[in-house]
Amino acid sequence: MKHYFSTVNNVVFTHSDMEDTAMGRRVRVYFERPNKEEFDFAEGELPATEFNKTYGFSQNELLQLKRYLRNNSFLVWEYAQKGGGLECLKS
Image 1 (cartoon, one colour):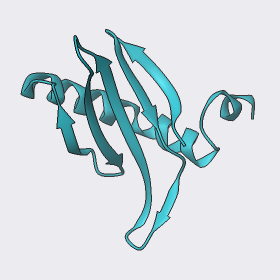
Image 2 (tube, one colour; image 1 turned 120 degrees about the horizontal axis):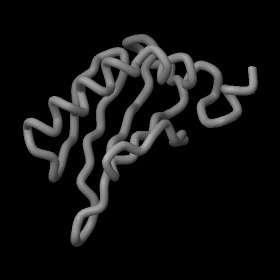
Image 3 (cartoon, helix red, strand yellow; image 1 turned 180 degrees about the vertical axis):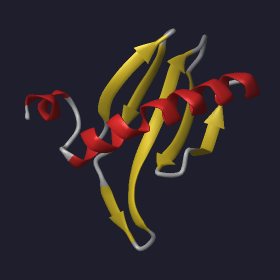
């Protein structure tokens, strides 16, 4: 499931629920923005702040997205542990 986190400069940032894997816990993260035909996107995960799929963003934009992800990773991790979305803000 994807949970909304923020929109900055027409780039929407969403994240998954907390997932348990053989490598440990992770949260998948997604950045996307509309372009003329489809969407530009960057997909990655926490706790690693690397993207594994990207399309349409420049290298400079990807660096800015990584910085944003690093600066907000604590909140995203906490929200994902609580189920994400607006519900986690009520507790």
